[in-house]
Image (cartoon, rainbow, N blue to C red; front, side):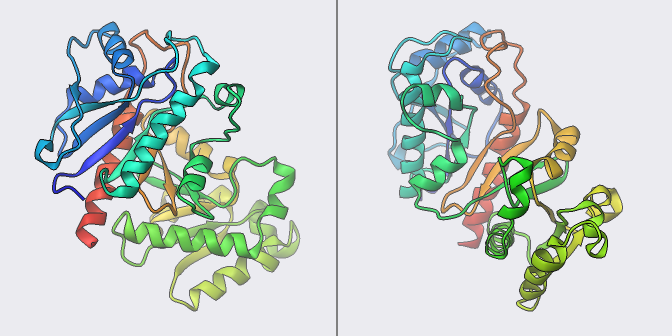
Length: 330
């Protein structure tokens, strides 16, 4: 890896707010080298459109060109001209081109991690390429059998045992093997990526009142608690299963370093209420560092200069911290 840490920032859906949010990265001093991956002409057009009168330096991969604090552009050409707010399936492959370049750079050590601006899953699928999201794409292209989605913000870290499932499918999806693998990944990455020695993980129950001793569901008794007890014998610090309605009060949160929620809307509404606009999506379990914004493409704001860059800035700061921690532990 280069002596100067270099992070890639993919600029996301070209019709969305991603390209102009990258303008905010130019207004700060960074302790690393940032490389925005996207079409140079599009990026400069959007930057000028929101009043950022500057040009982007061209990215040169050589270590001699590496300089902390620089923000450069790695040109990946659009497949067709892009207009703010107007989706075009022709550019679906372009979005994946930017991801592929960043992934390749992370895997080779050229980049210490990657930050992703939002993409539009639907328009990529309309381009003829099945795409269910960044997380699944990164897992497939790094040959990672299981990843864990975690959102961080406002002092909270909330990971999910299941993600985008209908509620009627959640209980069946929470198997002992899934739960064990998820906890192992969360525990390992809290140590490796965040530098937390012996992480404390608060584990939510699935049912109201964590099942009320089996009177409101038996998943806690039959699935969750046996897995927790087995992993505790290995030294993992696991607290739960806890009733989700009282887990997120300050006294409970003080006892842990992260929360494991059983499903999407059990944990994320609390975090997003506390941190929306400044939250970060982190993909755990990958062989590379990846953070992302916690919002979508905001087509209605694209080109307006009114999009809030807070989440992208926070995602970049977190990726830098994770990369620095990984380097210090290498």
